[in-house]
Amino acid sequence: MMAMAIGTALDYVVILGYFIAILGFGLYFGRYTASTKDYFFGGQRFSWWLIAFSCIATVVGSYSFIKYSAAGFTYGISSTQSYLNDWFWMPILVIIWIPIVYYRKIQSIPEYMEARFDRKTRIAATFIILLYIIGYVGINLITLGRALHTLLGWNTMTGATITAVAVALYVYVGGQTAIIMTDLAQGVILLLAGLGLFMAGIYHFGGFEGFWSLLPQSHKYAFSEFNHPPNFSFIGIYVQDGLANTGALMLMHQGFIMRFLSLKSVTESRRMVVCWILVLAPLAAIATSCGGWIAKALVANGELETGAQDAFVKAAHFLCAPGVFGFVLAALTAALMSTTDSLINAVSAIFVNDIWRPYIRRDRSDKHYLLTARITSLCAAALGLALVPIFMKDTIYGAHGMFTAAVTPPVLTAIFLGILWKRYTPTAGFVTITGGAILIGLSFIWPDALVGPFNMGMGRDAYKFMRALFGLLASGVLGVVVTWFTKPKPAAALIGLVGGTQIDAMRQFKGGEPNRRPGKKVRVRVCVDETLAGQNVVRVSRPALERMAAEPGDLLYANDARWWYGGLRSVHVKAGAPHDADESDMRISPEDAVTAKFTQGQTIVLEKTM
Image (cartoon, rainbow, N blue to C red; front, top):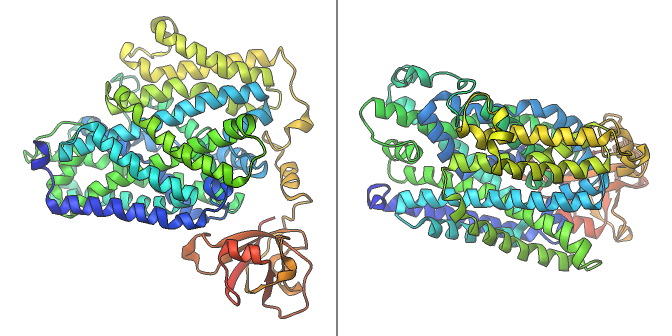
């Protein structure tokens, strides 16, 4: 059995220890979760660097190491394409989309659909997004199940079940805060393991030149050929991954919306996006693909025998000492858990906010909705597990590409047009989603007639990827045509929902005129004031307000002075009337002090956010 050939007892102890440590880590941070706001959005308090690592950990799923290492083994350096085609979404994300979801306090994508369009569009989007996210859970579970089968000889379903249970447990207890903090650790681990494996390979071959000389010439190009091979062409990857999949991650992935809303401000979210896409994503591209490159060089050197699907695991086993190999496999586990936890939490958020709260149990206590969210997390893990047998019928790359190409285009198109085009109508939004979904469904019945014209000469093998292009164009044409024959919403109803209305949205968010004057952070001392109970305001001295360029009524952010907490111990407050006591004192309500876990006399950092 292969389980006897790969890995030692020490490696398995390391993997088991990692599982236990991450589970305990996630359960520990459950103490920061006391409401649905904490469970879904982590209290909207975190720093950019923490969420940047959390986002890259979510993007790099367990399928990433297997999928991109397999592509790297077969096609070479061009396997990095999927991680390097996100940049053109950045302007839309940081200038338009993030301000919309933050200032309008959008809790879910379906909620945005109702605000921008109408109730029936929200219902249609809810169904498709849940299908998309639950399917993603299944893809991640099958990947780690297959990896554990290779390592331990377990049945794929057994490995998938064990990991599903572990992830569901800490998501159940800790919600978004537990996810963010565990993803920080897991993001660092997966980058260290992947990049460490690459450096070990370079060292083994005597330097980069030795490694590079062993790769075939065809493996040394940054991009694959335009339309060949059909399952790994440049245009296929760009359409399916760069347009459909990346667009879906940025605009319709509930897990990422919750990440954006967990940041302390829009400014922090923009810093996070720059770090995530321009710094961490290229590193992740190398970390996830290099196993395939190293394996190919080892095969060319006559040192290893392996196929593409086992390239990452076998290269790691060849290069790593016992225990270190276990750490690399723990990174594979980290990738699985850091993606699946976000997806499970996202399913829970949509179910509670878009199904349970508005239609089944209205006007219940927050504790009721928190319990419902936790139970839904367990159900989401079970549903994802039920999809594993379906995805077992295809390669991981093929299953992932086919699934995203089929599910994402209608909702993605509706959001894209909705945030950029004020004339885009509610009727058009509904037709874009439902009509686009119907046309994509019909493309499975008549693929030659519908997808064939868009396959760029690649034949039927490319249909699973090029269906994304057909779906985007079909949905877009429906939306544009219907818009010109239907009535749009009045401009007043679109404030904060489309690009160009950000200032008005900021006024709504604050409840007054935004203060955009640049100010400085100040260090103040916590003084718990019982007279401020229930007011969510703080009182500081006039000099402190002047240094922050703040006025009474402005929005402030009080944060633990120790930067490495990343906003975990913090709270959003409003500036009250200045006091005449010690200039360094900040008077805060008992409730806000408890929320931020501040203690009497503690020095904290206070800054103006708006």
